[in-house]
Amino acid sequence: MRIPEGGNSNSSWRLRLSWRGLFKRLYQEYENNEVGDSAAAISYYLVFSLFPFLFFLATLTAYIPYASVSTDGLLERARAFLPSEAMGIVETHLRGLVGSPRPHLLTLGLAAALYSASCAVDALRKGLNLAYDVKESRPLWKTALLAFGMTVGGGLLVLAGIAMLVAGGDAGLWAARYLHIADEYVIVLRWIRWPITAVMITLGTALSYYLLPDVEQKFKFITPGSVIGTLAWLLASWGFGTYVSHFGSYNVTYGSIGGVIVLLTWFLITGFILLMGGEMNAIVEQAVSGGKESGARASDQAPPPPDQRPSGVPPGATKSASVAEGSRGGRSLGVREPPAGGGCW
Image 1 (cartoon, one colour):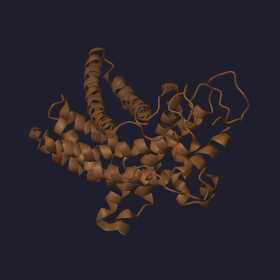
Image 2 (cartoon, helix red, strand yellow):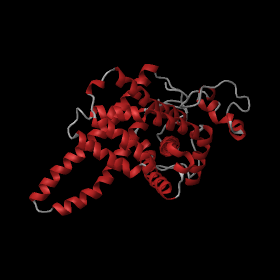
Image 3 (cartoon, helix red, strand yellow):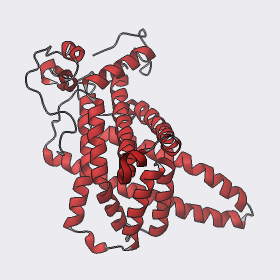
């Protein structure tokens, strides 16, 4: 569906969509695709898979150089984003795993851990398919392997990136001492780590938007959601952490599980921003010359008939009268597929 707002364009990057139109479309897609419910499903799977994923990372540390230093670096990076109550749970569990490495656990038990960890990735895939208004056409084994691969690749990227940062920092410090600029180097390194961390997060987000939905992608069309989503996530993490530290009373309200509730809420924010970034990418691409139309899997393909797309009867139609009336199925909802994120594979 082409959007006529904002005038025509001779440039492939000038939107036929105003900012007001963009935010209006984002709100419509938020309602139609039940982004809040999909984010809740992702947050559940993230909490469910957190400790198996930490188990996976702790097992890998036995095979990666600078393993113990990498774990400290991982905790240092996570401490900047996670609220303190949630960080206490993560740090205690991760240090307990690293303190007693068990390489023999690279067996069927690890495969089970990866399965639970990849459920969050699979829930994100389903939400992104809704953003592009496509039904999944890939076989189950392929989507399962994709979720496994993204989970393993994410773990390796995190550990290898931090190990390289630590090793590179040590090598740079040695060179700086030789050149008698060690103090200046430490100051620069302290500040440059954060842009590097932001770039890594943006890269991981972009890869998710590129690989997970069942559509052909171009990196230029997934850049808006990746960059804006990363900035929004960093800001939201800081704001939520500040709120929890100064105003929140989760421990008073929830007692001993207050830290778990904080972690669950932070994951909910993370899932919501990831999905809205995907919605933004889809909307922007549909409003740009050379992009895919809503429901199409490639820019040179026509979308299928409306009744063969998820938007024929959007998930949100069961909750909102306005969404039901605006859907192609009207008030006669008929039969539809389960909502995104409802089950792992």
